[in-house]
Length: 145
Picture 1: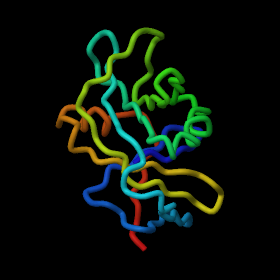
Picture 2: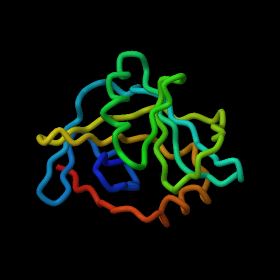
Picture 3: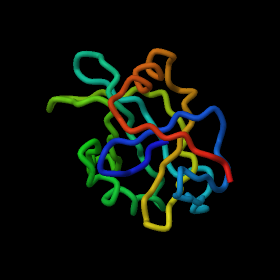
């Protein structure tokens, strides 16, 4: 899960957190957009290094692009109606996305308006998941409600 905060904030969970979950004192609620909010692709730098994911929302969810692209670790890709979410810093250059996709899962929101985007990780290799685990980010362990 990606928590859209000023600093990259992530969570890797074993199972879907359900309709609601809590992190310390913040409750996050499923916004009921359905199970298919978009598609996720892996992103690679020109060097071949896995650097992040590209979220391409379905047409009904494109309203999320601008608010989610305001963070230092995201980039709006207007010609593709998508947003790149970077786990590693990337120099300006060409990015390659792989054809392997995961389907967008649940979008959660806190009362403050903070959004959380969850996605399946089966399309990521064990090495890519390990790279994500090693990222300099804030890490959260959600508690089910």
